[in-house]
Image (cartoon, rainbow, N blue to C red; front, top):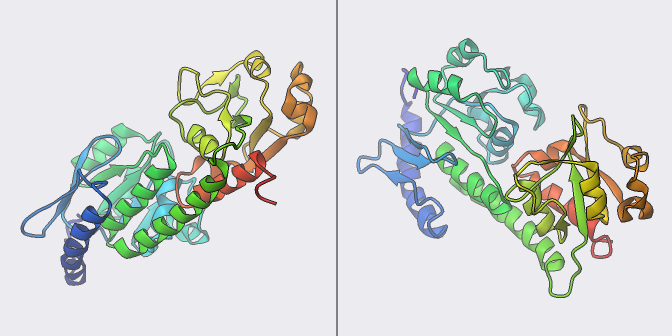
Length: 316
């Protein structure tokens, strides 16, 4: 917490949260197994996705988010007013445009300290050395690094606990869960084909895709496809053109956005790719890179779009 401590209103909210949190732990069947509540009601401890035990004195009222995914989650659950700063890449929802920018892979420590945050929230690819410097100054940080759709739902609920928006977070997670189930009910039904899918998110010095254990791999499976890179050696492998040709994907999906150099013509003009089923049949689709790479509420928009691309017969 900041040196100013909790306000009286925050303490009142915290008293209510202790009661609600107990119910949430029971309701979610142990998803918050690493979370404990002190007997005095003065603080609680969570375990983040890096296995770190983080103790907070109470509900943080001044949060700095250093990654787009947690930024989108915080605003989706109603905790936007508690966010006082964001990373340079956070651009959704529109309200973040007015917030102080605190850097990207290199943080502006002076700016962050000047915001007097109670908590810093980040994801993967964060400058851990800088975060440890901030932690040494009494500013705790939590890292959220999801790998599956179910992880996102749990993270949303956990963010609700941390910020005092338990009911709002549970409502968001429940609505997303219902949408996920509606897709899976069709795509994972018995007898449904599983077309081979290749997703490419970059072509810098090679072809970058999603391997086993990655979010992209989980999304392809949930959308009713088979990831051609599922058996590669890493979560985010760089593959060779020959590999993709040999796998012969039936569907190719590439990311679009300000930094993307990919387009449909990329695949039509690559040497040797004309024999790939997806290229021959014109099953090449672009998808907003932010939907595919940000593990927040909009990831279900991504799932629904993927399902339509992989199984257009199911989603007319």
